[in-house]
Length: 346
Image (cartoon, rainbow, N blue to C red):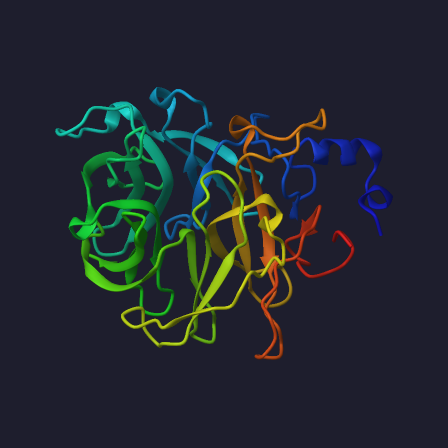
């Protein structure tokens, strides 16, 4: 049945505008608002559930303006990923970045935060670059609390390798943290983080180049990574990789193809995957992505980059191991009923 048959007109209209009107309902490819009514600006997101307060923290790039001087890392928090999301502030600004070999303003992209159990610090990594993408560094900052204040530690080329698109991954099984990045846009490299999470500890495996990497581990122990091709802001067919190997030292990635079945992956590029536990039923994975330049506007136009928005969709694993993993298009869906048909686009 259609959305219009289930929601009062006023509620439906508010939902389309991105207001958090229905707890647990996600409206992909629309602009979403925070608890004060402001548009959520947290692109290239990294998600973290803090072990200190169990709240979810959404870290992302600030509004995609053309002037880099205002670019930084924003943060929103919520009790669950269903929201509503409270703006916690801009946690990292241009003024905090201190690099002796080059002056800003800098490109700040794809921030990811992990909690270090040993140091009790929240450690942020982000792609740090010049406006022409020739600097190819990673910025590292840390804080005592998930919403900061963060202190800038350094900007580095991990393992001495120029770094572009990147992500972090903490293995839910053994707690080991990893850094995944495009190495000089020539290949993709994986490294362990040092025990304090402030640097990488050497390249352990590599693969042909891709970007927009989002790694996760299935309860059956298998590593997966959703990635994209290198086409700038333009969308392209996703690639889902499954590790045939048991470790990330020798993952033996197998390309499982494009789980969306769409040449543009519904105009999305991956940024993160979160495991979500519904009120009833088994945990499942949520694909989190950005629609950089095709987000629909109220006047029927699309984009541009300054109007980027978010696409979150459930990842469906087949009961038959030989089946295909699927990400289906939906105008809206319920976090507590992710594969139900009531709100699906059919």
